[in-house]
Image 1: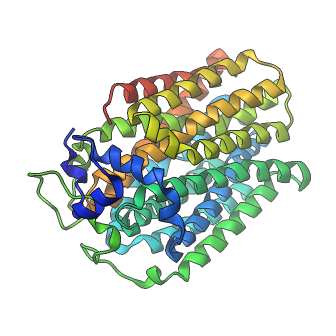
Image 2: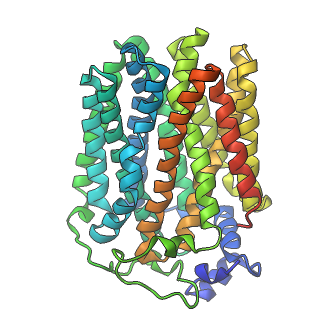
Image 3: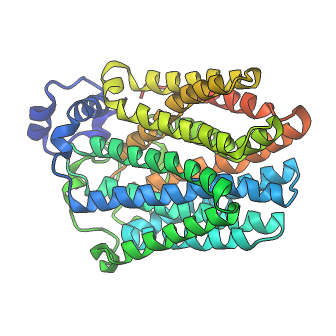
Length: 442
């Protein structure tokens, strides 16, 4: 592996904080050392980072409360299984086309305006879904929800990469993904409670729209909202984290930066494939678990509990990620987490006891929780600062490709093989992702 992509500019500070470097694997050495001492890096968190964490929790909560409600809304409209698949896939439709342009927008105009726009689109989409009376119209509004979520995510991740000090990025990625897990934990639980006690799906969409609007207004007051950026941004503390590989020409204009500049980095393509498998699996569970629960006769509160258990287990796995990365090689950790989740989900159709289902979902959540933070940190560490938004947008574009195709394919499989094929399809996808990660020396 060419380690020059992540060679620190200030070697003395790096060596003093981490000790001896592993030859040929400085990225992994640095990740492990940072995660070994999270307290030293996060004792005094800067205001922008606290703002980022709060905004992340709110948007994830709003989106992951609305998404299960979208499935129940479609069932209220008597949607067929293939229509449910199209509705689930629509979440990624706009995002697939716009992920890379979104990354370029962030590089050009800055993170804060894109974050605010994304939150506003989430609010508008939730209102639209609540008002729709046809399955195709729900799919259109659901696509807008996915686009708003994409804008928010790529801008927040770029802000995290650009503003973090040298040596702090790994720990802050861990904190960011914990915030994501908190939103994904609370969102489904809130949706289940609102649908059971507050009058149905409309209450969920009303709350999610309100959260999105409040988040947009919150970011509109951020100083970065009025700070324009040209082809290059002013230097910040995090700028010295990485530099391009030797012999690679540096492109100062992010608009002209090519996708191949990102994909040529060692291990990035494999990280993106693993990320696609993990995120698409989560997407299928969020979209189809309510359908499975309806057919099995489980109440909406139990389905919401299963989704929340998945979120809680993912949160736990991210909290112990530092210890795991110190003891297990990254590619082995990625592969093992995907394979463990695959085994747990493959067993669920054979289990009828609710407590056992909760346990299996917890195991799946532990495995699914590690894929996104590990692959996000890898891609961000390999990209030069001036195309970092593009790199993260490309990663999200790959994720959205999976989110577009996989739920639609699963919907067709359900039509032929029955509702239990949800879990077998997801297990197969995770098995493939785990094997790719296992064969790639990250």
